[in-house]
Image (cartoon, rainbow, N blue to C red; front, side, top):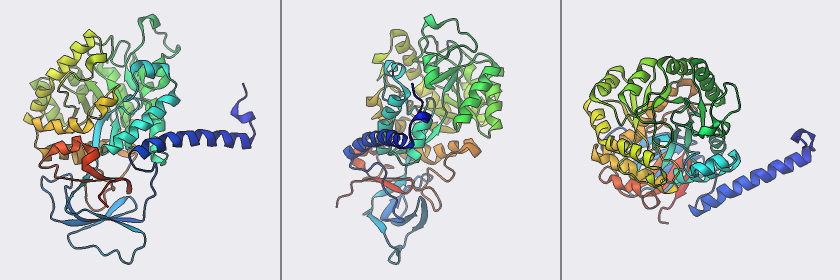
Length: 464
């Protein structure tokens, strides 16, 4: 077969143009359904007039105010009218007393794993999977989630396409492939693939970049460095069993402490951190001993483990799993594991509040477009344990604080999760007051009238 280097420059350009045209056509079709353009031009300035601000930090709205956005940052906030008469091409958005708030942040998302089923994912090439993820990325942004931390999956190319304006989507903090052990959470190989040959052919899920299997400190170090080389902003390991993986009981603690420490050292050398998937006290405590900064899930933790997390200043990134929705595609053993996790949800939030653990909000939706559409509803479910203001602060400024742990690997330097002068302009104009009724975020189509990310308006359904 001829390589691209043997094709004439004209044909190469035509081929690339056709690929790009097809890609943009798909993105555009998704956007038209939302009455947006794929990559709206950024006007020099946007002025939000007469809005009440939820700033992401305080549990009360501001007095009527005006917010001026220049390029991609908030340039000025004033209770007095802002005169832009001398400026050209300023877009004025009449708030009419509505609430302006920061874009929402989901700290546990899997951009590449939301739309496909496991069979579709493993049987498709990465091109189709990325296009499918691109459609979902647009839907994610239209739900008001302007930033996500991707906790496993080959999302690097998707992130690049979004950042370059090829299609609408949220900011992505990518982890790259989940690093797991033989038989651990994320090892989807059939038993016929055993025994594994060190240095042998990669399993299909590894070829796709969904997960990587590592069974020694040296292998862990290698796999962590590979994700960092590709642009990971943090590294994700599975320190214990999981729900969806067929050979991964919840009670199993997977990596040894030296293996976990190898990943921590690799990440720290790059100025960033390791997060571990961990439900049980043993997997959480072993992660902390190895230097892990963030625990994902934690639903089966006990009182002593929660106290240890608080004493060490360890972050908890957890999710309000409240029912067995989406478990229909799981086998009996996996459904039973999910039942254990759901039963632990009240415990993890109760302990987090008791010990004032630094807690972030995420959703961890997998393999279900329908569940993804409930992303905002999962945030609203936090009112079982928190006030609406506390929940919104968690999903904005608190989540943004965790993102800063990426240090120099942070792909979006600047303030996120707040409405203040100098912050990045990721903003939602809400029809109603979410501090009174957090259920508003569960219906973004109706209640989020304007969605801005990085100074660009992707949705504007204000009455004309």
